Length: 440
Image 1 (cartoon, rainbow, N blue to C red):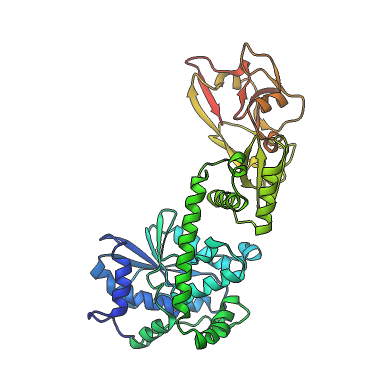
Image 2: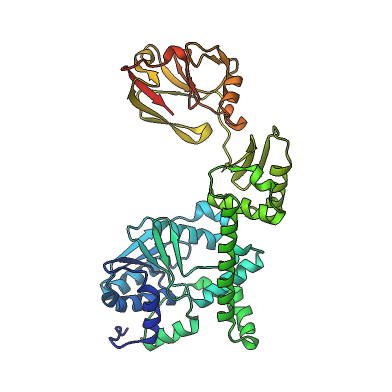
């Protein structure tokens, strides 16, 4: 393997032109290294550019364990990085839990990004190129994806606190191969790349060679289309924000005043902001119809995948589908800072304070536990207030119906102390200056 030349190289110049405005001097750049030709080429280029652009280069190889040759690939990457004196981290991941829901390719991609996210590096370099972009666009079109989906891959993308960089996105596979041969580089071939049963490989080996006979510039034109779609997706996001997206909970009234297409755009954007998976087009249409067409007091719940959308008091709530729960559940509290409450899939926090919340002295008079509603519970929320039935109390405080049977109730012995997040019984309220506990 030859070392990088100190002379200016047009390939290096193109990568440098992409990276230079994005990488401040002293940056730490992590390369995702599979050992395939694309990432080996990028490693070679970045190794040459690091002293010129003033960044520190390291690499990560994600070991999925899918191929019988996975161990050999990890060894190859280790030896390659040792030759360059570049630090390498090998990350072992298990795609089995995701494979059923997402398929092998998508699961492997999710696990790779999760591995990169754990790195302390702010900048992550990926070796995607123009052919990958064209393949991604075509796959998304064939899946019937929306504008966001067919935007394909951006050359720069924020992901959490990190910046994902794809400095070779406008360079084709043919150019990469010519570079690799010019510098006598070695790489590994993933045997699955020859398997036409993978949709991406079918496009690569069967469709694109035929396209190239009639449309030799297909890479560039499909790449341009992806950029146009990305711009259109950005405009649709702006429209959604102008229509009221951005709040944690979306008012139904904001959807009702819009055309069907614009309402769908706002709802789609809202789901995306909440981190929900995207429903199918027919599901989205049905969701919009149910949310906007229901009576004010109707209990609307639309399930899609592991998520659900609900309507309550004119507002739309997006959440993970809550699991089944044991109605006899009891958790003893022995002074912990928090207890996990499985019916709502969240922690109940106990915070020591003075003069507000629940009197610590009163709590010491019996065994303290969290329980679920059993029926017939009442509570006086203030010394001068009348006793309230649980039903009235929860309605007054706007607790959504799907949470009411799942709310944690704090007991001292057999006395109801508080409905967590709603009200504390008057007889347990802390007095001024008294050691006390806030439960939320």
